Length: 289
Image (cartoon, rainbow, N blue to C red):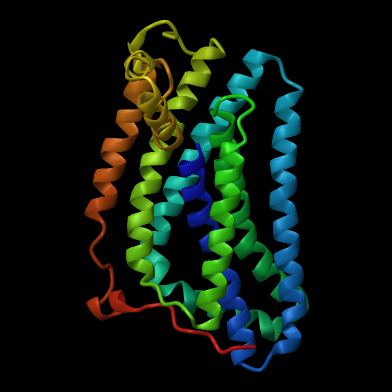
């Protein structure tokens, strides 16, 4: 789970970091440094809400019986995949124009007052934060019990996202956002397919859906024959694709039913939706504060 959660943390964290850097850079560039206080306040509240959401999910899950816990985890996994899929397509379409859209909202909020500025920051960052926490939580829940690798992977991804966001803000790094979100979006769809399939496996363990004993594949048998190299390969595949020791027919079917059409639709929409000159835009370096 380390690699998969690293990808989630990096991509989703970078979305939030980009939002923050765009908001701060615009206020600095336009000479509205006083407005930084309510904006940072909104960002802080958004981070606190996201962290509280993750704590609440963990606390609620820990008090449940096994089958209820599996039902809870399965439903949230499917919901999280739905949200992430929507965000992948949304970012693929609007990444090139996110800067101008956020600046437009911020300009309007400047005319209203501090509360409006805080609200823009809270809503912009909070949406990214809650979505990230939900997807990471469901992915961590599906990992082997007691393993710290999923948490380490997510933390490393978030750290990398913060560093990249800072470099973008300071002008030390330029990224073609359309290309970045295309490649990471495709990779995230692969990760989401594993979470989606495992969500239905959770529902089987909760006795909501039948077929728990109808095993389609047993990758662990193959990996056991390989010995040490097989253990390493199984860890990688489980971390990225959610390949469990035993895969039910329903789990396999739902994995394929998600991955094939979603990936096909995503790749089909990689063409520019606006004039081609806009597709070449990179993140402009913001003025140093």
